[in-house]
Image 1 (cartoon, rainbow, N blue to C red):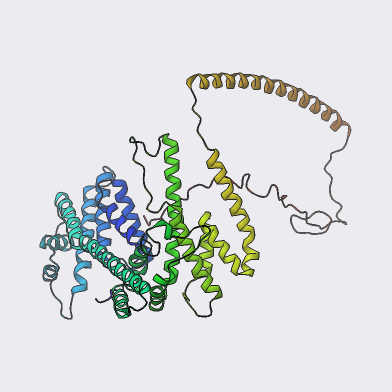
Image 2 (image 1 turned 180 degrees about the horizontal axis):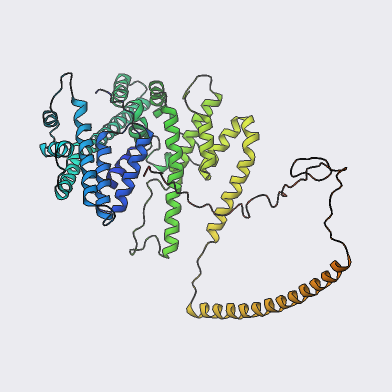
Amino acid sequence: MSRFPRIVPWTTLEEYQQVYQWLYSDDPNQNELGVKRAKAWSARGKVPHAVVSTAAFVEVSLRDKFSSGKISNHELRLLYSMVFIRFVNGMVDPTQGSYASSVASLALKLNMPLRFVELRHAGTHEHLPSLQVLRNGCQQALQWLNENYWGIQRPLQSTHMNEIHSLLSKYKELRMKILKDSELDDMNSADKIVKKLLNLVSAEYVRDLLIPVLLEKGFLVPTEEKKRASMTDQTLSLDLWFTILRKFDCEWANFGSELVQGMLEKLVIDEENVNREANLIQLTNFSPASDLIQQPKSIHSNSSYHLTLVAWISHILKLRYTSDFVIFPELDLENVLEFCLRKPNHHTKMVLQVMIDYDEELKTTVTPFMNYIVKMLNFKDNFNCDKKIPKITDDDMNREILELREGRMQFSSEINFQNNAILCADKAIEEENLITDSSSESAWKMYDLEKWKECPIGCLPNGQIPCLDLSPELDGPSNIFSEPREEIYLMQTDE
C-alpha cells in the first residue's frame, strides 16, 4: 500500500474529529468553538479548503441567526454570496488544467450540484439571490461537504488504525511463537509484517495512527496485570517488542520522540481523569456503584498500566544515557524534562528521578524543583485523604448562624469603641501640632546650593542607593501549596 504523507495543522485525529462534531452540532455554542478552532488552524498552516468552507458557512449562518436587527438583509445576502463564491472557486480551481474550462464542467467532475455554480454566478455577475435561497443553499452546501469530504475522511482513518492493530497483533503472536520455540525460524514472516507497517504509515501519521495502537493494552503494556511492571519489578517485554521498536526508529526519525511524548501524555491525562472522577463522586455524595449517577470511566485508571509506561520511558532514557549504540537519536531530553516539570504528578516524578540519576549536571539544577514537587504531591495526598465533607443538619447551621451574629455584634461594638478612642487621640494630636507649628519654624528647608550635587533619581543625598528588596518571607505567594487552578487556553480570533 502506498504511503500518504501529509502535513496538517491539527495535532491529533481526535482534535480533527472534535472540530467536525462542533461544526455539525445543533448547539450554537459548539458551532462557534468549531469556527474558532478552524481559524486557529489557518494561522498554523494550510487548511483543506473543504474545512475552511464548512467553517465559513457555519459562521455566516450563526451571524444570520443571532444578529437580528443588527445587520440588514442586504448585508446578509452579501455575506452568503461571498462564501459561495469562495467555496465554489476554491473547490474547482485545483482541477483546472492547462486549458481553461468552464466552472460548470469542473463542478460536474467533482459531483458538485450546478445549483452552487448558479449561486456563485449570480453573486458575481447578476443581482444577489434572495435571502431564503441563500439560506437553503447554505444548508445544502454543508450537507454536500459532509458527504463528500468529512464522511470520506473518517472511514479512512479508522480503517488504517484497524489494519495497524491487526498487523501488530499478528507480529506479537509470531514473536511469541519464535521466543517459545528456539528452533522455529519464521523471521521472514515477521519482517514481512514490519514491512507492511512501514509502507502503511508515514512519518506525519506516526503520532496519530501508530502510537495510540502501541499504547493499547495487549501491546507494549501486557493485558494481564501480573506481567506488567510494578514499583519493585521493572521487567518489560523487551524480547517481544524492542526489535520492532528499533526498526520503527530507523525508519522514522521522530518515532522515539512521539512514543515518549504519547506515554507522558497518558501518564498525565489518565491521572487527571481519575482525579476528576473522585471529585465528582465526592461532590455528588454518591458511591461509585450508585445507580443514580453514571460515572465516567478512565481507559487506563489502574496504576500497573502507568507503572509499565514509566518503565518503558525509564528504559529508553537509560539507553540514551548509557548505551554505546545510538537509539532514538531524535529524542529531545530537554522536552521530556520540561514536560515533567510542567505536569508534575507521581509518575512524571519517577521519570524525573531517572533523568537525575543518570545526569549529575542535571541533578544539581533540578533537585530544588524535585523537592518542591515532592512536597506539593505529599500535600495533595494528605489534603485529599482529609478532605471529607461533614453532614451538617439544619439545627447545626442555625446554631452557627446565631453564633456568627453574636460575634459580629460584639465585634461591631468593639470597633466603634476603638474608632471613638482613635478620633479623640487624633483630635488631641491636631491641637498639639497647631500649638507647636505656631511657635516653631517649618520642617521643610531649602537645601544649601553650595553643597548640592546632582545624582540619579532614587539616590539618597549621600549618593547611595537604598536596598528596597523584600525579605524572602514576603517576596512570594502567600501559600505556595495552594491547590492549582485548571488552566483554560482561549484561542484569539481575528474578528
